[in-house]
Length: 500
Image (cartoon, rainbow, N blue to C red; front, side, top):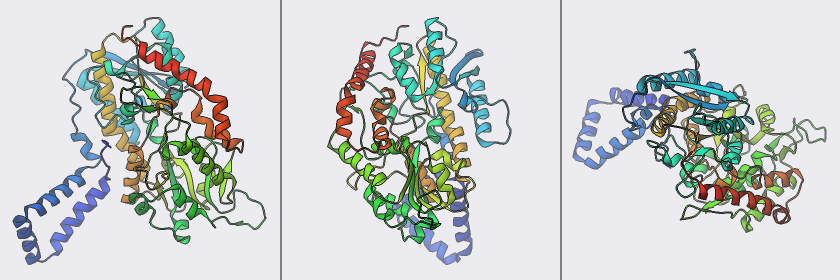
C-alpha cells in the first residue's frame, strides 16, 4: 500500500526520550564500544538509519511530502463545493476554537487560500438532494460549483446522468499520491476514466471504515492469544473467530432469555456490518480487467460458501447477538462490556466508545483463510465520494485546488482526526495505531458497489434478514436487472466525452 504507516507522535517522542535516557544511564565504555561498533560496521549504521527514518514516518512526516503543484495565483477566484449538510464542518471552519479537527480544517483552508489566492466555499444539502442540485446547475451551464462531495451510492447512481467530468482529464491531479485511495485507481477507474474518486478531503470515508473491536478484558479471561500478533502473522480468519467464540455465551442474569444483558462472543447486525464480510473475504462484485473494463463475477462457489458461513454464524450458534431490523447494533451492546467482539466503524472510537469502562482493541475483519494474502475492508455506503462537475470552465484551476484540498487534508485534517480517536480508552497502545493504519490502507471501493445503486451489494443483508442462505435462487431471480444497470454504466463510460 502506498499510504504511509502511521506512528503516533507520542510514540516517536517516547522513543527519542528512551534513547536519550539509555545513553545518559550507560557507562562511557559501553557507549564508546557501541559507537566504534557502528562505525566499523556500516550495515549496522544503515539499520539504525532505517529505524530512524521509520520513526520519522509519523503524522509529522506528512508535512514533508511534496504535492508538486505549480506556483499559481487565481486572483481571489472562488472554488465551491456542493456537499452533504452532515459534513459541513469537514469543508469549512470559521475560526480556531481548540477542537483539533475544526482547527485543522481552518488551517488547511487558510493555507490554500493564501497560497493560491482563492476563496473556498461550500453549499450543502441533504444527502439525497445533492446530485439533483448539481444536475440542475450543469443543465443551466452554471459553473457555480466545481466539486461535489456526496453519499457514494447516490453519486454512483448519478454517473449516467452525463454531468460529471473525468478526473483523469484534470491537470495536476496525481492519484499516485497518498491522499488518494489506492482503490480510486484499482477499483473505480474504467479504462482511462473515473467519475468518482476517494480522497482525504472526503473525511467521512475515514470514520465510516469497517473494523472490529474486541474487549481486551474478556479476551484475557477466555484465554485468547495476542490478537494484534495473530493479525500480523496472518492467522486472524473467520474460522479463528468461530473458534474463539465457542463457549462464550452465558445467560448472565439467569432468566433463561437471550437478551442484551447476557454475555456474547459477537454483537452485530444483518445490514452493512454483514455485507462488509464480502470484501473482507477477498471478494468483489466487479473485477477490473487488464484492458480497464470490468467483469461482474459476484456469483461463484466462494460466494455460496461465504453466505453459508455467515448464516451459520448468525443462526446456528448461540454466541451471536444480532437484530434483523437495527443498524449498528454493536453501538448499543458492546459498550456494556459483555461482548467479546463487535463489528463497527472507526468513527465509533470518538463516539459511542469514548466513555467505555474497559480496555478494547481495534482489529480488521477476519480473512477467509490463511491463504488470503491481505486483510480487506469496506466503507459504509453513507460516506462521501468526490466528483467534478462537467460545466467547469478552467480545468487547471479545478485540478490544482482539488489536489491541494486532498493533500492538505491528508497532512492536517486526517492526523487531527486520528489524534482525537486515539486518545480514548483502549487505543493508547502503539499496536492499535498500527492496526488502525492497516485497516484504513485496506479499504476497497468496489466499482460494482459504487455504480450499482441499491443492487447486489445488499443481497447478503437481505438473505440474512430473511433467515435464508439460498444465494443461488436469490441470484437467479435478481441478477438480470442488476446486470442491466451495470451495462448502462459501462456504456456511459465508453461514450463519455469531456466536452460540456
